[in-house]
Length: 495
Image 1 (cartoon, one colour):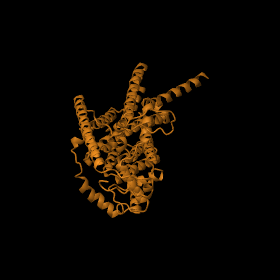
Image 2 (image 1 turned 135 degrees about the horizontal axis):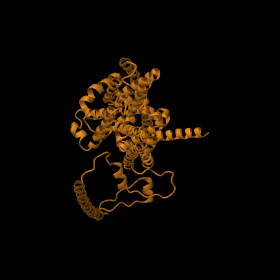
Image 3 (image 1 turned 60 degrees about the vertical axis):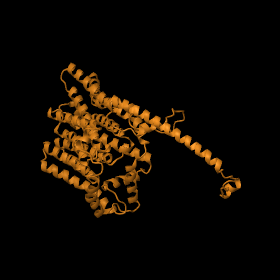
Image 4 (image 1 turned 90 degrees about the horizontal axis):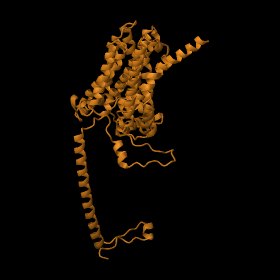
């Protein structure tokens, strides 16, 4: 009787150890992230999102894409928006809710596959894969959602954020396929590998730069040693890619003009967009968004280091290549818009979660009890710091306060200046030095004083102008009958 109770207690303790790392990451996010998601769900849509919506609506009304309605995006963009419209995305709030929901679900799925990155010597991680999947999925959902809401209303719900759904799904299926093939479950592994190829190729028909992520997955597939040959794995991955490409191609054949799409995509777009706001690679990567570049390099380098130290398997390199390919994609587009960094920040978030879980596994595998306790404290501190940093990012998300439609109690009134400052705050931009901020405040105060002077001068001039006009030309006398009949005849001058 005592041995069975001890065994149950040991199993509960092992399950708690498997759940702990993700719970520690999500704990600091439990207050700030739900409020940030609520505010983001009520944010309005910007110009680009309206264009995507209109093109999808026109195609749904029977127009042919690229012939009746011109569009510079690939066929995957109107296809996705047609699906969102069918799900109720014609309303801004519902559209935002669907966007946040799909982003969170795909991030949770990708994180739930991180149990495949655990060392095989950890018995608890092999026995409690479900608990580890829940823990890692919760952590990935929190971190990815926090970095996503930090983009603001204009730079979210963009093409890159939609294509990240397929990227996250492809990464998760790739990790599951590698683990299944390592355990000699060839049928399941081949199915996951084909799904990874399909979801990796589909974003090509939205933005061709997403081919970089497919090439990176193929390279990791060739580096990872499995029982199945590299040629067979590459063939299955490519077969899945062909199946994934059929979806947007069939949509293009059914609801678009292929010739017009080819002319716009390969002739008009390169000739026109090459000269619109071009920026050099150094200006893109190391100017106002340099912190995103350094975060991508640091997180990717950490995963590569853990692979070299054999704390992570070779398949984890698919996570390390994601932020690096994202940086190459940003440079290739030569614009440096903030929403181009979506795959960079998503890949960095996944790498940080993988590193936090790996440090926890390292602490859990220590043989000495004292060393295990010290290592557990260090791993817990790292997980809490990651969650705290992401909670600060979510707390400062540039969205105005959400409308209180259901609250009957009185709430604090928010001024228009507060709403404007939170709505148009640039995300991820490095703060200026104190001297620059002081000069900016001084120039702003001078500018405000000058505007007030001009306004007072114009108001005095307008008052003098009105007084002179009223003395020389009186206002017409209006009666109730003339207003009803619509006649407002002006009296003669001088009467």
